[in-house]
Image 1 (cartoon, rainbow, N blue to C red):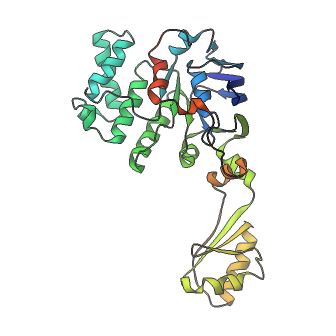
Image 2: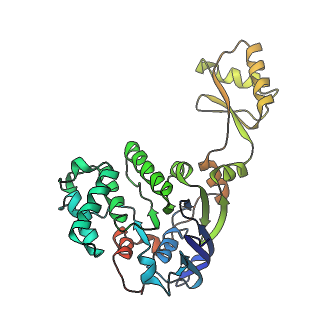
Length: 334
C-alpha cells in the first residue's frame, strides 16, 4: 500500500546553517504523526518541504506516491495546511470564508455553499455562520481555519502548532476535530510545542533536534526510555514532610522533598509498600501515595539531553500566511 507520506533522507541548508540533516518519515492514511523538537530544530522546514514551499537539498518526499518537487502541482491537490495562527478574513462571515476557499478551488456556486454548510455543521459553527469572523472567539477562529483547510477534502493535512494561544476548552475541541479527521482516513502531520497535545493525539512521535532524528516511537515507548516509575507520597500534614522524609530514608535513600511531597525515583510496588509501612510505624498519616510513570515532558527533556539551543533555522520564522499559500497555488514550488 502506498504511504500517505514518505520522506527519506530530507536535507536542507540555509547558508552555513544545516536545518535538516537527513530525516526519514512515514505516515499512513488515518494516522497522526507528531513532529516534536525545540525551536529551530527543523520542524517547520520539514513542513515547508512537504508542502512544496521549499526544495530539499537532499533526499526525497512523496505524498501518495507523488514527488513534492517533480509533481508539486499534483501534491497540492492532495494536501492542506493549517499554520500557527488562524488565516481567515475577519471581514467575511463564516460562510463567506469557506465559500471563498471553495470558489478558489474552482467549485461551482451551489457546491461551494453545500460544502461550506457541511463544514460549519461539522465544526459546530452553524449558529455563527452569518457572523463576521471578527466576532468569533479564538477557538472558533481556529475551527473555522481548520474547516477552510478541509474544503478541498485533502488526503494529507499538515497542522503546524494549531492550538497556539488557545484556552484549554478550545484546545480540547480542536483535538476532537483532529481525532475525527483521522478516524475518517485523513493522514495528519502535527507539529506542536504542547507535549500533552502530542501525547493525546499522536499515534507515533518523531523527535528531531538540530536537524537530526533524536528519537522515534509511540508516546509510551518514549516515556519508557526515561527509566522506572517515580513514587510520590503526600503527608496529610505539610509540617510533617521533613519527618516523613526521615522515616522513609532507611528504605529509600534517594527520597527528596518537592512541593509538599516525597519523591523517590526508580521506584516499584515493593518500595511503595516499604515506605508506607515506615510512615505508619512513625505515626505519620498520608493523603495520597502512588507510582507515576515518566511524563512525555520528562522524556522529551531526557531525549534532548539539556536545554535547547537558540533557534537558527530561518524557515522556522516564516509566517502562517506564507505556509498557507501552498494550498491555493497551482504553480511548482520556487
